[in-house]
Image (cartoon, rainbow, N blue to C red; front, top):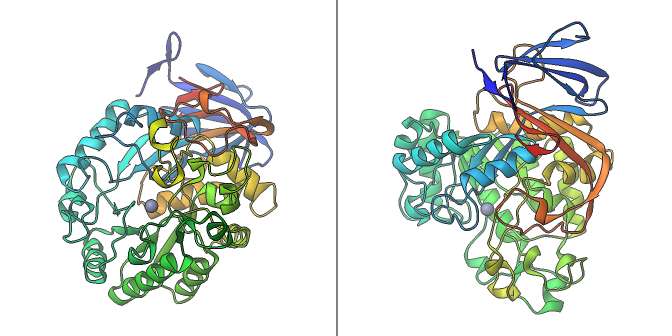
Length: 443
Ligand SMILES: [Zn+2]
């Protein structure tokens, strides 16, 4: 039996009163010994603690397929502890920690180190992602089998930040991961077409005189990788899809029955490359510099529709913390990336729910069930029903508040939403029946 101290005393049961599961009619949820024990009108049930969820929506704990926790190596930007605090505050109960750490997570030893850090300091589950190539060097396969067999049980492999551009290596990686039901998550970026690229290639890059990052550099790799995955009968996941053309290619691959999945980031669902010219935070603000870059309004429309119709399977944050000195510099010198764990659900409400494109059941599917399934994460992404693990998020969709970077748990402050008013607020998060967040605060 699991027990823990909550303020004082020992709590093993929590009664959540009046939560709207997936936005439905209010009902009570009893968490006992780490699982959802009962759902319904539980007015007569005694529990060690009650949580008033009047007006709150209950979702299964969110799962991120794409988080940069930065530890080991860049603890000045984020640590496993602060990154998972940010995740819990954002409603997440599991994150996949990307491999581009220092040292790179390309051996059983390093992925086990990250996994142990997660066990020790995590405010949510931490599932390490293994590198595809040694040192992200793009020339030699990493120890994929050893990472899969390690205590970390790696199933997702990615050189994210870099593209596995060598077609032979990509083919070998796709073949190799079949042995343990793994998936290669590709950062699709043709390197020669994006040398020196600063932002989306288009009217804005032309006006600003910055080197453009053309859509075709993403689309060409996605098309190639879909064909390779089909050729060897393996599983491909496309990271942070950013263009309308990419959506068309993925739609075509899925129509063939190929095992291809894809993610979109919250920022690509809300922001466009025009932010580089004019935005609440001023022109040329490198807070908007990200890879792949923010695209056009037409791309945003296509991405939203693709997430709604399931062509894009899930939302993944690409939470990319950077210290101030790496972001508050001139555009060309600034690091690429933005944080996103603590704002993801609000951005999805703004871009998808308030536009009528997804209901809350759809949000649960795209932010919990599908990412958990793609990452083969047992114990996450399950429906909110008796017998499921007690992984839950309670969310208040009725509030609107300005985004305040200073109030965030992340060690970094590089959010593009500063000052923007977004809907919704995560009120509580439960990991296996234990609160990690209550009243919007870390427990
Ligand atoms: Zn990436």
